[in-house]
Length: 56
Image (cartoon, rainbow, N blue to C red; front, side, top):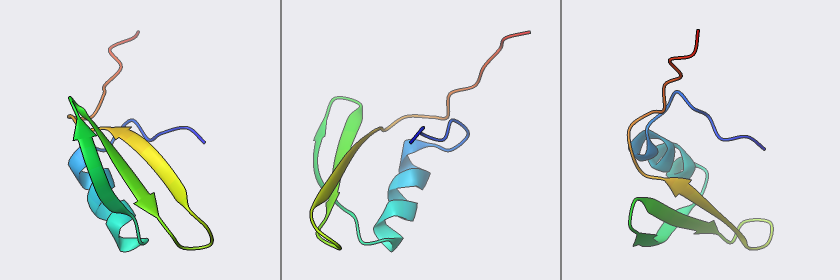
């Protein structure tokens, strides 16, 4: 699954919290979230402003 590029790390963390994920650690600019719903699942997301493509 591709990560959304138009949402900040803080916004994505809040959204994932609504789905049962909790943050377990942060290393540099990345945050690790995990859930126990339907078996254990973890995800690491970049915790910074949205990435914007300036491509033409």
